[in-house]
Amino acid sequence: MQILITGSSGFIGSNLKKFLENKGIEVISYDLKDVPPNDVRDFSNLKEKIQEANGVVHLAAVSRVKWAYEDPLKCINTNVGGTINVLQAARETKEHPWIIFGSSREVYGESKTLPVTEKTPINSINVYGIAKVTGEKLCENFSKDYGLKTRVLRFSNVYTGKSDQLDRVIPKFILGAFKNEDLIINGTGQELFDFTYIEDTILGIWGCIKEIEKSEKIYDDFILSTGRPITLKELAQMVIEETDSKSRIKNSEGRSYDVNKFYADPQKAKEILGFEPKTTLREGIKLVIQEFKEER
Image 1 (cartoon, one colour):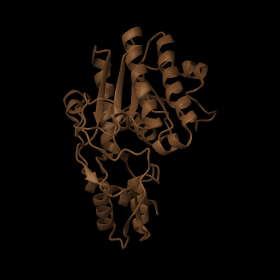
Image 2: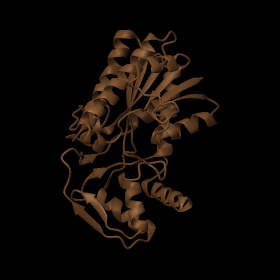
Image 3: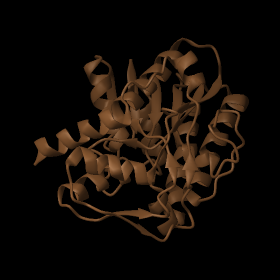
Image 4: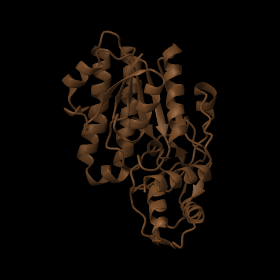
């Protein structure tokens, strides 16, 4: 099997690449950091690279809500334009490789009901979420109209240590706690989320690869989430405990584009993909702390 990963140098992409190669699967890298760079906005290059692939895991994106807020045009051009390029390239390729699209919990926005499921109404509140919703709809449309086999995976607050974006909440809190710095929460601290350790997320993607390979179903969507929520204040307190830090928790003004409450029921992914996250948040935080200590 040959699998093309767009965003193969990114946080999730690089971990998935390593996992698949350890399984003996040939990975075709596709990333702006490649030499020469591979850009999902370059349709002809993408079409050339996709020719030999059995499937594509499409992760390339402007991957942060904050970055999308700061540069919405780049977000739409990359996240929407790149996704339709992947789909059209697969459609024009003789073997019609399957597509797994990396989406996000952000498509749900501020859901009126929790936990969220795959049947919960979509209601994104920021540019990043809008771009992901559009990508999902494109996948669904290319499946219905052109028979392309696609899957949507909605990730929820995936985290780890050195390969993560270091200004995201868990690595940021841990690095700040090491220095006994104040841990700043954007909001009241009652913001509520579930967090998924990177290894569990990768196993969820692997479950989806196995499912899409054998299934006749043309389109489906799944949430990869633990379903175990925690407030940001409780998260900060946990980090302080595990690092034996003297840090204090402080609050700053919330941001208009942030979702404040989200957690999901992963039952569908469990039943169909065999997805069962094993790493509790406290265990994951301990792993990240150890990872950073070894790095230092």
